[in-house]
Image (cartoon, rainbow, N blue to C red; front, top):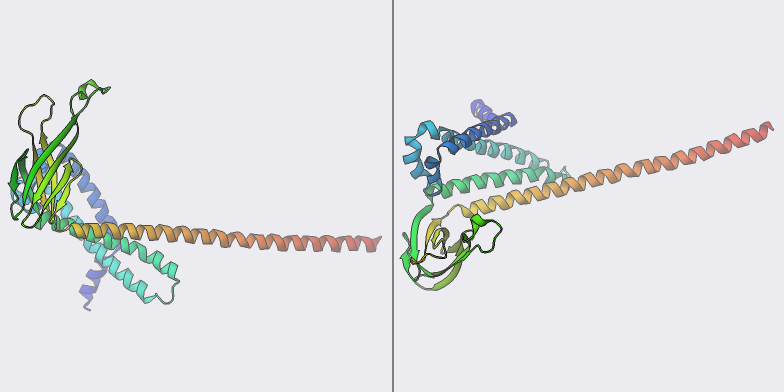
Length: 301
């Protein structure tokens, strides 16, 4: 391997670079949180459109406000590269020592790298979802009505909408406000019809698409207009990678904590057995010394 490539590889996986990248990300995101607070309309659309669409409109046209987001994305990319290189180097080193290490020691040292792999998969999954996914907003369905879902042969109908309102609450300002909202949807496909219940905090999935309740009507029990809901329809191709990343991270963390606690308990147990032997030997030596001293005194008498 050429020296230049070798040096670049070693620098990309160095711990000092990891520390500086994490520090830089923390500073940039802190600045960004302050900017977002004062320019909410620019960043609010991030939750409604995909990243390429947002970059081509709001992002490019407001660089004096959005610069921190581009910089944070760049820093996260370098952090992912740093994590990949560092993990690769250490995994190769561990595999070379596999036969010489105890199994528990090997997995204790290997578990952090499982978390690193999960972190990389999580970042890649989010990137895929926000670049090549589908995010359709303002899909309004009236009660007993249906809509066609773009980019598919699926239709969605609203069979019923149930809205419960606050009653007898201690806070007068909440009296009559919506409390529990749920809707019964019918999914009409080429080969089947299925009914599912959706609510504000409980999306539903059907044929690779996720449906999220964004808005609803009525918001007062005295309203007399036709009830409706507004859906956000998403296709999230990176969700499997995200879930895999979360599962790997949790698994690696569990293995690390379990083996670390086990090693600490073994150490305490082993260190606790030595003083017991020492106390036994000390007691034996004390008895022998006392006996010799008593015999000496008898001889003197």
